[in-house]
Image 1 (cartoon, rainbow, N blue to C red):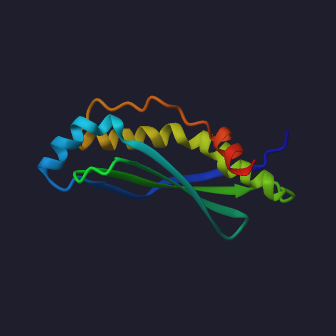
Image 2: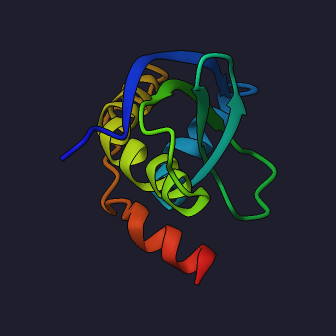
Length: 140
């Protein structure tokens, strides 16, 4: 099977941890397991058949609580397209499913370590992200 793409590099593009004050921290500590994970993927074309894929994860309180902590990471992955004859749909699947499946376990680990280091040591994300299911929901 011919290789269609190659991941050239990964890096943390941006990182944000917002805990406004001690009261918010104490309040957030009680509700952190009720926070929800958001995922957004954007791309930016580069030279030489490369694409920068930005995967942004945010972990935030979806409720109307006034005291909230907020965690966000933007993670860049540079992908080189080897197969020049890819259809648009195949490229979308590579970016939104295959690349995400490869990088997500490490990205989730980085986010969880940051949240733990911020003072929330017992956080575990129970749900596993199914990128193929998300893709199918978006495009079908």
